[in-house]
Each structure stands twice: as structure tokens, then as C-alpha cells.
Image (cartoon, rainbow, N blue to C red; front, side, top):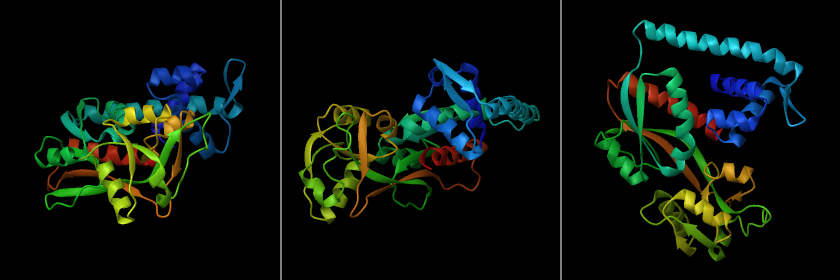
Length: 298
């Protein structure tokens, strides 16, 4: 149980609606529902039930709500007390993210940072992993989040998650009709992939070249959002991480099946310069990235 999950529960309980709470919190409704369900599983009780056109609190939910308010108030009071003693983290810091990771990682991270560090401004630069690597080396970004970075004597590289690649296709009413899941069978599938020098394209081609399998690329598309839209429209398939499509899969717009024989993995890493005395802002951002990547990928 964490601060953010309790806050989500309180918002849903107060609004008596996942939809209204999601709009107020500015997050996707499936993600909000998943967090509340996770809280219920952790506590082993139902907190909310559907009643008519809205939601009602169960006895357990009514018991939790005032306690949750109390805990949230205490956390805010702690933050105010710490800031009042001059230990406040302030200033600005630049975070670099790849498009696929940034879309799902950044909004929750920024929301959390505004609560914990209201005087810290986090600027975000979105770029492909190759550019992000250069940005952190040249101090344009304090930290970059990218896929499969190469080792470098001046950089500290911390793995945040290992994502398994999936064959992604359109959702309902064609859900479940993915043509293959084995790498050896993908050669006949029409694929929509990003162009070079995208790190995802490099990873996929390297994996298939090792097995002497020719990819059937029907379109090269720059931008993961457009790739997902085209796949959803039935124009082809793609190979993406499950994290990048899970909202669409849960909504029935896409379907996904992990690749096997063998699986193909993609490492998401935090990359920062190797400095003996990193600023408090860098350390705070680093810890937020670790926290939110675990929430997203666990």
C-alpha cells in the first residue's frame, strides 16, 4: 500500500465514479481501476461495489475512507514540516525519456514529484535512445531513461525493468486471431515497425538475423502512437513491449501475445553521469524513477 494508491481510492470514493475520478486525476480509467483493484487484493476485501449508475462503499470501504484521509493528511503535514526546516529540494532538472517509456512513466512521476517536491521543476526531453545517450553525456539531461544502453566509463547504468516483446495485432472483434507467437513463424507476418536508427528496430532485426529469418515489413512508421493506431485499424502487426500497449489491450483495441522460442527482451535503464557528489535533485529524481518503473512493470 502506498500514498498514490490510497489517494486514488479516496478520489474514486468521493466521486462515486471511476470515470469522474480518472478525469480529475488526469489518468487513464483502466490504470485507476487497476490500482484500486490492487489495493483490494492487498487488503483482501472489496472496497467498492456498483449500485445503480454509480459506486457505493462497502463496510470495509467506509471504514478505510476516514483512515485514508488521515494518512494522506499526515503525509502532507510531514512534507510541510520538512520544507519548513530548510531541507526542501528545489530548482530545475531535465529528464530524457524515449517515447515508448515516457508515455506511461512520466505522467505519474510528475504528479508524485509535485506532491513531494513542489519547488522542483522537472523538464522533459523526448528522443530516441541514441540521442538520449548523447544528451546525458553532454549534460543536456541529468538522467535519461532509455533502452539497451551501451556501457560507458563515465556513466552509471541502472536497469529499471526487463520487458518481453510481444506480437501486437488488432483487438476485438478480431481478438485472439494473432497469427503466430514463435519467432520462427513471424517471417510471414506483415509488420509495421519504426525505421532505423530506432533502438527497437535494431533489437528486432538483430534477433531475427541471428535466426536467419527475413522480416516482412509493410510500413516503416516513426512514432509508437501511430504504429498502435495503424495496427488497431487492421493494417498490419507490430512487435512492441506489453507495457506500451497494455491500456489498448485492456480496452479491447489491441491484442498482444509474448514472443517465444526464444523470447526477445528489452532492457529499460536509467542512465546518469558517474559523479561522486550528485545533487539532491538528481538523487530525488532517480528514486522516483525506480519507484514508478516498479509500479508500472510489476
